[in-house]
Length: 187
Image (cartoon, rainbow, N blue to C red; front, side, top):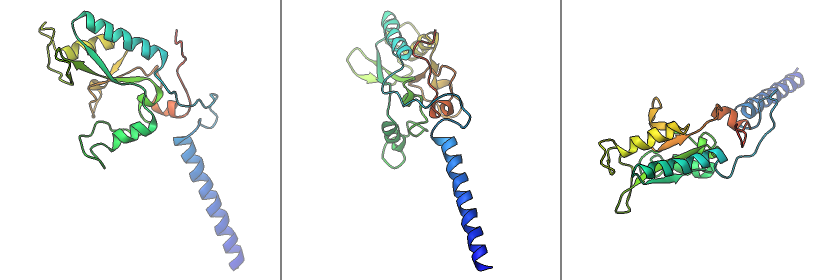
């Protein structure tokens, strides 16, 4: 009886371990089971359309007398994890609520911006009106970005990411984690 119980325990352990591994892989790693797409590696730079729209954003803002600085674009998982630790295990304020692999920056689909003042200082001042037209320069940049197809992190429910602009091409983070990528030429 003891040997049969031991064998049954081993089989149950192996089955349980296998299920845990399968569920982990489905949720965190490669393509979902039954998914027709193949795994695509993480990009190493901004998506071409995001890069083009980034340049258009800077140019359009400049025409309004606003100097925009792109402070971040593509980010590795490691860089994202470093940012995630800020305000948690390291000093500073919390600047993100997502770890590496869970940010559109990791897939080359997001940028962050700030404003450059006439004296050269870079600021994240949402009230600044450097072009003195009665509107916040920050919100003018957001308006331009949205017109170019970006989603603004300042409109998210919950955690607001005011410098963040992204183009998700209709893809969720889960789809991106599972290897799906937007085409280089979405037209």
